[in-house]
Length: 225
Image 1 (cartoon, rainbow, N blue to C red):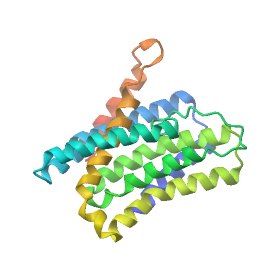
Image 2 (spheres, rainbow, N blue to C red; image 1 turned 90 degrees about the vertical axis):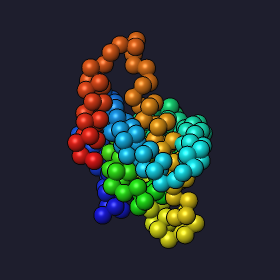
Image 3 (cartoon, helix red, strand yellow; image 1 turned 180 degrees about the vertical axis):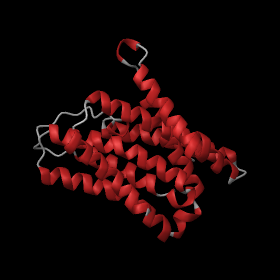
């Protein structure tokens, strides 16, 4: 079921674009909701779990900081796709290889600690992937990539997290360092979710709809996990 949920979240995001054609405002609200959910799961569940799992809290802290730095580097190639902004222009002829590589690596790494962290992490990734898939699908279609290219890209992206789960189950070394890997992913999540939630809005005005989406994401975490 883990694989189906991970793949299904990307499929759902793609279908939302093809069927409902959400506006930019709706997409931003989905991102705000997912960012709040991701941050809440990270703070309420993932952080306590990694600190309880070891007495060497300094290593945990270093790994979290490493995750923040790693995500900053990846975003220099993905152009902000992980938090909903693809600052990239394309005419549909030249495929954005670095965007593809960065998002694939990001998705793969997310899958590595899922079996260890359990449903809390799984649902955080699922909720996070839906609006990202919406953004990706919208970008690929607006950039006039062919349907074949769009489907291929989304399919590979959808399979990367399940691949991470599979390899973490099969490779003993990954299992031995699962706590450190989880801590790195926490850093990645902290970076992504805080950018989604706290990036400046137009004219720095209070956005009630975004605020309510954030509250909804937090409340969902409190009442379901």
